[in-house]
Length: 582
Image: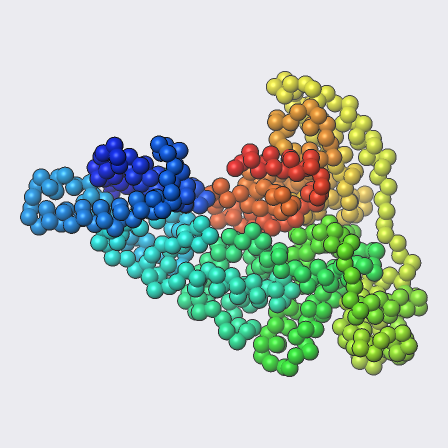
């Protein structure tokens, strides 16, 4: 099969040989020879401002050049080629042999693409065509198939764009049917369920009266793969529980409001199971007050099975953080929002009951609880105190319930405070004793290892530690938000150490962050970056394998505690890291 790039270049040069046609030659070559490694296809605006042009053109002029080539000049050449073949005119055929070769090449590619189940993102087709030898690494296949109509080659599919990325669709399917309609539905479902939803639930029977027709097109497993590709275009999309659940960070309003209300009245960590159970109970209430139906029961069942996904979601976006003994405490995101949070009147009524339980210093019986509620709680809020509390737990039968705090906190427990100031001071002195003015080219491995050890020690002493065993502590990786034994963490420079000035190397509080070994490699090699809002994102400039894509999904969308609003040093280092891998 002939090389597409050589053929299209030859044809463009032949059809537009004059000096006055130079701008057309440049735009067409820029378009058809663009690299498949580009994150997005070149726009008309970019084509019109190609640097090699004598002067910038308008986007309408760029559009005109492309249309003239595809709809006028190329079809006219095909007509002449077919006439030469019918007349067996060897001179005319030889003159247009490049066009005959191009037609053969495009036909083979079109026939191969037609074997793919659709819809599918063009990059997946591109990878498979390349690995199977149909195209070279330099060829972008959608640019080949868009010529099919001009060359009189029939297609059962077409390639179109959505938010800058190309999709391969059946000829009778609209782009909106397999994009915006699905995203809107999936977002609505996740919001309805408090922020998270399983793919099984999304692909199963609808929890609404209507459901996008797309879900009947394909087998469930193929649909899920396409959905992950589609949702990944949204920077707030997250995959949870080994790709069995999904979430959008922007849809966490209900869960964050519940947590802010809880930790307004608790200053101690709360057991994870109990905290998750009250979150689910609160989310379920809005469905329980409605008439019984299959859809209502389906929503409740979805929520009841989503506890682990909700907990992972909250930890990854720093609404919650881990504490000792599988407990949870407020994360950085929640702490920031709590400063402006105002509890509802219903929650304030529950706070009255919580204070009475704490005063009793033991669980309250149903009778005791009812008497206190009758005396101290407004009538309109009593039902919330009894039926769906979020500030305390109830157990037992309806008439013999016991009411107790979430954390067995009866008012005597105090937050654990670890005094690390002396240890941190000692670690800093060790760091300050190092020579950061020395040329990196002559710095020994031993010196660098010592610096890494001391820097990690300093960062650890200034971090929240949790007990994981006798004389054993763990600290959080600030990328995946998981806790690891201290000796498995690395002091990862945010701005590459070799690019740092001596003063930046001495900026111990900001120049580095604690990372686990896996996240350190992803960050150091630029597969992940952190945006100006502190969100970990995948670097789309890199092509990745299926296995690496799954690994990246476990951290993409995470909020990092390294980011502190107003800290210009950290922001500058993050921006430098992103630019290094742009």
